[in-house]
Image (cartoon, rainbow, N blue to C red):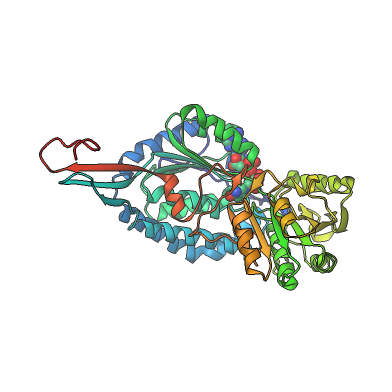
Length: 499
Ligand code: NAD
């Protein structure tokens, strides 16, 4: 609720200063559990602001790239320590702006902590190769070089984790950064940047420009001084970003949508599979790119699984994420809630069986928020739209399957390829699934969500464009190899010619 002193007004961060947008306009950041609560006003920025931020980052790059990586890393260590100290407050603020329950918001901040420590550790690694030359008295090696200004565009569902996945590897490799956070969750990025600045990041190394996708994101990814772009969001916008980078041959990393499957074979531990389906389907209100929005169950255990899955879903308590009794928070905004309701209608029209849920919640504490019931459709055909398209809400499509081969075919029969999971006690089946599921991530006897920061993260097909986030793989995007030959023979030596 706005108070008598007015809402908190936040600014962009450009060239080491907190500054207003050149437009003088602002947009609202509101609590999705209670849209009457105004969290703050953020600048509605313009291409002019983007230009100032990119120029500042380009200037800063010339000195930041020369700071030894272990020294760059010391700043990240200090930032990680502050994140640890402020974890609870950061998580509460995140729940207020994003809606996820507090335990999950704490997990989101923890992911940023883990990534910051991990990438700080890279400051003393960033290993290259040394290898013998084929010629005498010649030395050969490769080193990682920074790219320049990295433009980062992030979504709202992991408002601190995802920015940290991009900012930390970019910085430790010696790049400078301009980030545009999602309009629904600018506060968490603001807090992360504030902490990096307090930790001693020099002027211009990190810049934040708030605002809309077309108004800020588009001029940012196409700015002539940007060296590389990393985007996480929908496949539709990812395609636009890719098209904008293509004519400039600009490296572009895309992490996009998912339609992830959880497979339950006839020999699965059903209790475990149901725990996984509940957490995978309704954790973060189904608003995870890795959410288990499809479940394929062997016909021998189908009825039993579906009954128990539905009974468990009915016990989930929907509420404000700050309420410790809530299991599931609201959808992020009215538009996303409407999309969920539209898909519930589509599912019904397609002939799927609505087993539980299917309604917006508007009574009592839900009155001012974007709440929806956990919803399960049974007897779905894999070709139905609810089993093919990303809904990004608390809706799960359950499909009966004849056996393992059909499970793999159904799993691979979508345009996305982020995460898949299989529940089975049969080690051969598990290994076959690990081989044949065409996704970037496969889980055995665990749900489709739960990535750890030191392993590669990303997907195949329309989920990604071949790059990976997190772990060592992130370094491959935020640096490029330079190969160095030093000939100390004092004579001309010709590779492949002189023997
Ligand atoms: P979105 O594509 O609508 O927006 C993502 C970001 O792109 C936002 O910051 C937005 O302002 C910006 N944007 C919009 N139009 C733009 C343009 N023309 N040019 C440049 N930037 C533009 O996605 P969203 O609704 O914020 O997030 C949900 C989507 O993100 C889902 O599809 C989800 O699967 C995906 N996601 C993927 C991953 C992953 O790692 N694969 C992780 C989280 C979310």
